[in-house]
Each structure stands twice: as structure tokens, then as C-alpha cells.
Image 1 (cartoon, rainbow, N blue to C red):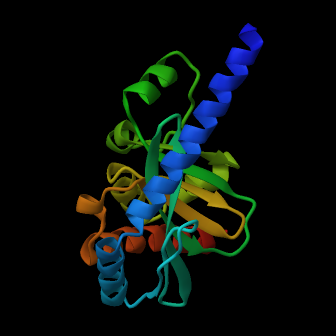
Image 2 (image 1 turned 120 degrees about the vertical axis):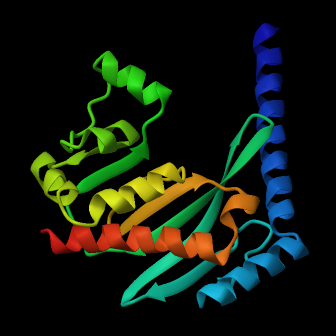
Length: 205
């Protein structure tokens, strides 16, 4: 009997999660929201894709000779959902794996007890603010010592992005705030920082 009730609870939870995700998608695709996205895309010189009830809107643009994207995705948990903003820039395929994130209380704690081992840059101020992980370590260190890496990594991490490489892209992802993120100036500065990281990855091979 208890097993049956547990199954009912699980089914209801999944249904609520799906419904919540759909509602978030509908909200995100409201007319006013799409109009604002279209205006920001135009200001960036980007091609705008309005999306649909099951697909988030997106933008595509070029910065120099590099192709970039601005996309969104929704993560649901129980009856709540969070929208994430993703900035993507093309890079030449590489075996280098890198992850960049802001240092918070949790990461400081895990580092203290030895469960987290970010790569040390030798710059105490940078290491206090930004955690860099990746492999091979010597390759990552050569990136960190480059002229643009630390500034770009600091900029993105302090804005709340987690940066990682995947196949032929470098991706910066953060919880999306319409108020803080949805302006041409902010997105352009964030994309410029991401492109600087992409250029550093390709220059220091």
C-alpha cells in the first residue's frame, strides 16, 4: 500500500515539475519579453530567434571572425524552475578542459578540508576571488599567466558565470536576471570577456 502511495507522489511531483517548466517557458515567451529580446539583439547586431512554447529564444552574432550565441535554458526542481543565461563562443577543438567559477563560502570550505583543489595562479588576490580547474595543469597555468586571462576570468566569475569548455565551444552560464542581464551593454561586455578567453585558449597551444 505504501509503495502505491509513493508511486502516486512521484508521479504528481513529476507532473508538477513539467507543468511548472511549461509555465516558465510561456512566461519567458511573453510578447513584451520577446520584444525586449529583439531590441537587445538588434543593438548587438545579432540575429534573433524568438523560440516557441517548447524552445527558448536565442541570438547568434559574430565578434570579429568568431561565431557566438546567446541562449537560455530552464532547470526544474520540484515545483520551482530557474532560467539560465548561456553565452557561447566557438573555439578550435582542444583537449584542454577548463572550468572557471567564483569563489564562495562553499568552495572555500571544501578547499580548506582538501575536497577542492583549484589551480593556484600565484596571485593571492585572483585566487581569493576566482577558482580555476582543468587539465592538463601546465597548459592551464600557461593560460593563467597570459595577458588577458585573469581579467576576463575575473569579469565573468564576479558576474556570476561558470565558464567551461565543451568540444568546440567555450560556454559561460549563469542564473538569468532580466533586470541585470538583459541590456546590450552588459551582454556585450560579457561576450567580449568570453571571446578574450577563447582567443587565449587558441593562442597558447
